[in-house]
Length: 335
Image 1 (tube, rainbow, N blue to C red):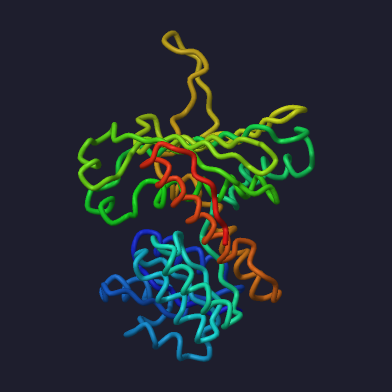
Image 2 (image 1 turned 180 degrees about the horizontal axis):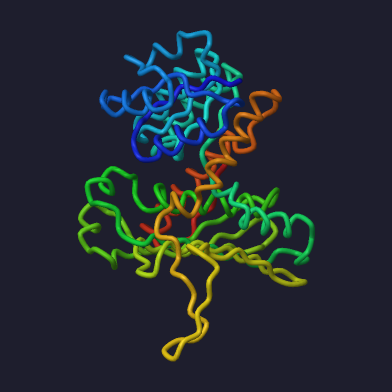
């Protein structure tokens, strides 16, 4: 059994706590820490864990095998570093941080500690998206030439959150940067061109953010990746991937509340609405992500989505930010 300490008892922390409990006896939630003591105590009590009075308490316990970091982004680097130094495996929500300098500092600590660190790019575990990746790897569509990722939220997040989120490319598109790399495999992205607007709420322009964007990237093979984002899709949470190649095309589509289709006098082929929230859309992928993390620890193998994947996703996000500011394509420097 893998004993896991949870840092962060907010919305996504609650999801992870429930998933850890669902995977018993492979894993057990043993500690919960959050600056909101009452929330931490409530989750700990619900799942038979202890509320941790400090960051250090769970790390000093030899019975803690791993930590799951679901706290705010500005705490990620410090918590990863503390857990790594304590010899604990880490699963951390994305992004690692908003600045590459802090990510690289943390990278050194992780390398020295030699502990498994997995970054929470859960979309790799979505079974439809993974099927697209598998089809590409199996050569079903021949040579990959175009990869199109549509990722649109149902509604704009609150402005106080957006002000500290790091901007659209680091907060939202970063998932799509990683998903593109997942499908491309060993074909690295060499160039990024991005453009964006504040069309949903012009107030975002006041602090340099966007709510609508398109990104075009070129891989070393010449394959092109197109990512389109919006923070407002009135019809629901829109998540689609299309891989087009020399021998065909493969797509992953949206999930709906049910597979019912209706035919009436007012509509034909009317289907149920899209799922409206990312936790619903990717519920199973969060479970599969956690199961893979537990498997990596138990089997003593590297995590499937590692620290370097998180670092490269931020590199691409930074390149997109630079491109959107300059209006020019930006080469990706991996060193």
